[in-house]
Amino acid sequence: MAEFSRLYNIYWNIRFQRNKNLKRKYYRYAADEKKHPIASGVDPEELRLICRTLAKQHCEHAERRLKTYRLKVTQDPISSCNCGDGNC
Image (cartoon, one colour):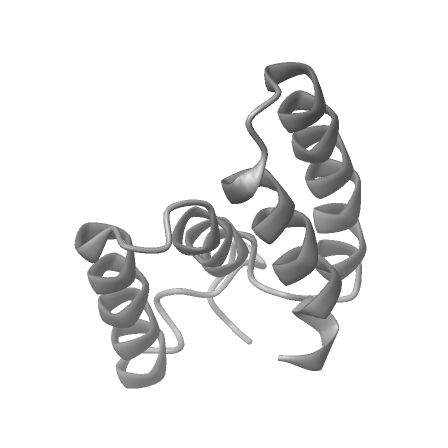
């Protein structure tokens, strides 16, 4: 989770920011920061679910979706392949 430390910081600022203009600014920072892990090979769906969980810290549904997605990927890694042909 060390590679997501900057995202944790950005989403903390989003959660506790009251000014809507600054909140939008941090969402733009988050969008730029999400490009780096995706380029390095992180699963985009898992990253989306992580960011959703970080944006709404007390949302049980977001945490539950992330946990079920991680279980699905670890149980069935071939069908959740991102390369398209399933021969990973």
